Length: 394
Image (cartoon, rainbow, N blue to C red; front, side):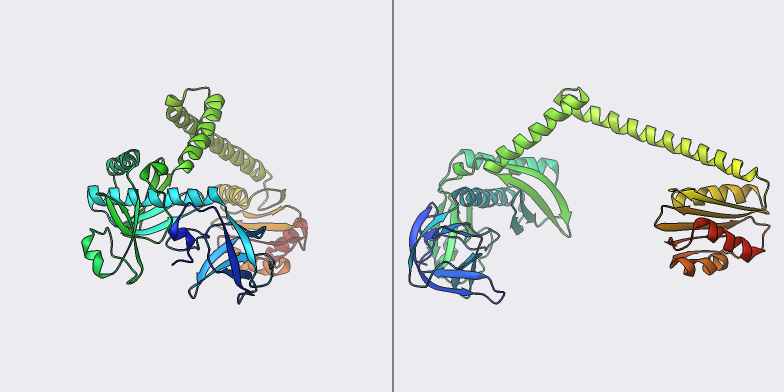
């Protein structure tokens, strides 16, 4: 533990160390092991530190088989050398704020409602905890957030104690510890006692704030998404920028934003419905115009039309003309789409008919004896396909 400087003082930003060895792991990544380090390795839900060693960027830190490996893109220098090391303090302090904030929020849910935290993840943007409850109300979330921020405002000390397994009975732990030796407790007096190997600030006030952002059911648990510390300020700024843009675009004050958006969505829904009705009317007009050709077999090649439009046109025609056959082809230059339909007075099998054509264009499709559709590559022109279909039914 003496070599893990982040446990002696989480605020260490620079230090000197000696390279004990420098190797590549089984995947070919370069790493060094130091005689002591303040770089925190990934673990316990907390991401690793970054920074520099001997002027080289450290992009990953892991503890493997009891040794802490610091990973680089290229080797540094030979083992045995002394090097200067610098922690990326902004990243480290952010992790300290987030991890301590998680302890406080988890303890708040536990104190108020008995909801245990059964999972924790610290992401680059937000944190999540999984609570052992299938339901969470807005009122419960608000009360837990209020208590968490009250504990932060009181600026209670955050204490670190190393204890033995026998000494654990002296503390009202929020959850059982997984380790049986070198047990590290993170304590907020009269509020939270928890085994943890992460880095934390000296007092709750340094967490600044906790804000719950959202939650969702996750199997039999509830996953809470939240932010702490400087992330809360940053997110507030981001959301404020979005609100300002929306107030300018919609020309409404912030307090009326929800009403304005609801009106906008309702208008869009009405416009969409009107547009769909107009499309239906145009398709019906087009279908009647095609039917006026007074031909038993109706054929046409369309440019850049959807298969859905062709299907609607064909159905409109055969529903009104029982003795008709309809063959439509749509092309976009690279692919062909084909619709075959018949009125109920006809005896031809559309599924069988289209099955004669699709292999010629490396296509696939399906349907039944009355209506079939498919598509494939533009290996033939639309006119050539129609000619073949007409030949097959004559």
